Image 1 (tube, rainbow, N blue to C red):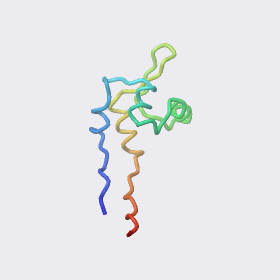
Image 2 (cartoon, one colour; image 1 turned 45 degrees about the horizontal axis):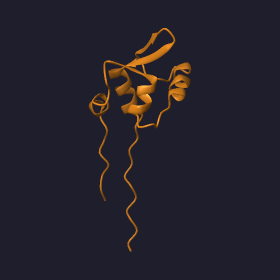
Image 3 (cartoon, helix red, strand yellow; image 1 turned 90 degrees about the vertical axis):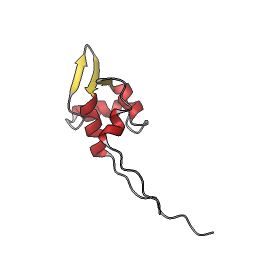
Amino acid sequence: MENIKQITVNDILNKCPGPIISRQQAATISGGLISERHLANLDCLKQGPAGRVKIGRRVGYVAESFASWLASRIETKNAPPAPNS
């Protein structure tokens, strides 16, 4: 059985284009698993990433805070063994 690689904060930070990322970039960095809208909802519930920044009406996150938050939410599981043919 092959183990799934544990995703680290540095793995996520390497995908960040700069020190501050927009919600749209955050959705892309997550591979589309978390949408901009979901991030907005989590922010309203105070469950989103810390380090939220706002410029006008646009919201973004400090990349390091977002990466730590995302890494803490990632749950990896081993794939079930393939059936014998």
